[in-house]
Image (cartoon, rainbow over all chains, first blue to last red; front, side, top):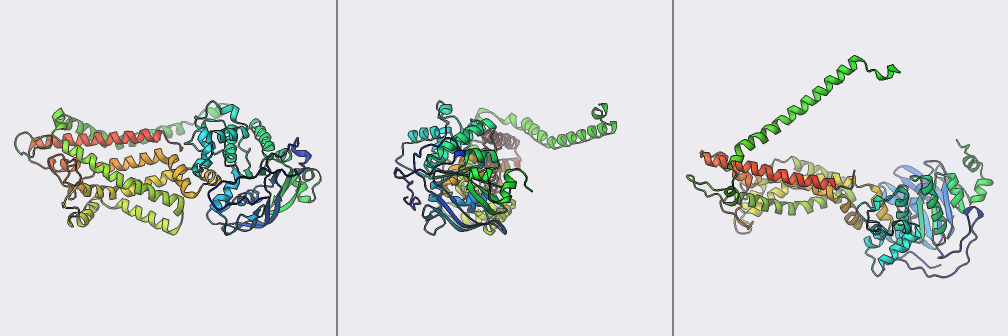
Length: 287
Length: 288
């Protein structure tokens, strides 16, 4: 795999080489062929703090390429913090700091030479609450990542259509691209945010409870979308919804009190977990 | 379930009492406002005529005193320059405080001094500009319109900064995070996401500062002073509505006093217009 972290303002262009696809687990729906090989993420001995609070205590975990990894656990277990450490959003909070390593393929994103802006272009993020830019149209929201970063030499019209199609939103909005983004329904807004994220063509997409503000039908659409997106991206998703983890994830990681308890294939986690605490959590007998 | 629907007579009486007390309080507060506007209208409207707005003061003590054209033009010019100076600076300071300074010690110090500046009497700004710019005769002339603008800008700066900071703080962090997560550098997030989102509120706050500055006499008294002729160059002495009113109202000539009332009404109308525009902008706000 090529090194995808870059130091300048260029967006990464990933060579379309074919690699052998890792076999997706049966629980994640119909296996789809990999369209674009994405890199893996390796986390080593990650500690994260908010001021004096030690929120993540030495987590080591690998996120497989072109797979969906779900992170589950009770509120306050540190799963969202781990996610925010994966594209260095954690450090935006006052008083927060991180130790340990997060490698995108071979490059440590916390390395001294690495530009945090380039990290976030390679590792995109979708938030819990849909947050389209209120001053921008649907079109401009999708193009925001490219426009804000002053990227030149990209056919914006083409990229916007491509991204909206990628987010399964094109057919619903193609006739009103100039309408404001906040005029869409909650579920459409969240898919707009996903389109905005993939427009930058990242390698990895992080999702922080992307469906917790959506109704069941909108949730289903986003879940179907996630299954398609993994043919092109490595996906890490935090969810409170165990059924959602079972539906979309190839592997699932269970966190408790800032530590990783267990990480295995989703099938195994939900049917035959290795740790008693995992079993109690997934069967709803926790605490 | 009558027990749920019947309020006790005592509770109803208390409710009525409190409602009437609050209504009475509101009326008392509105009374001076109504009185001022009513008095201004009755005294000032008589002075208004086409000539009143289209001629300069003649400066003659006897005979036709002339109108207030130079005062209106001067006020608009000086306040516009003051806004051009203070609004970019104030927004810049506010952006720094909200986007970079946050809760740091330096930001806290800046905030403190901005608050102190808000409380400085307007005549002090006038004195400061008099001592630094007028006495030194900077730019040739001693008294000049642009020096009045500087005094007004100093007066407006803390108001613009504080109001802008409040509005910028209302921009949800989720938008900043969304932009940052797209790989946008922080300065671009501030200029291209935070600023446009807050723009209607920023304009409203700044227009209110403009409205306040337009009515100030003290900063202009010994910086721009008073002249009769309309000055389209701020390098010369420049007339203004408040100073014109101040000079006229103390005059022993009824026609000049009459002109003062007319000018006062014109000033209030000008400020009201600015405030109305400010309200229009605040309706377009993207922030709740």
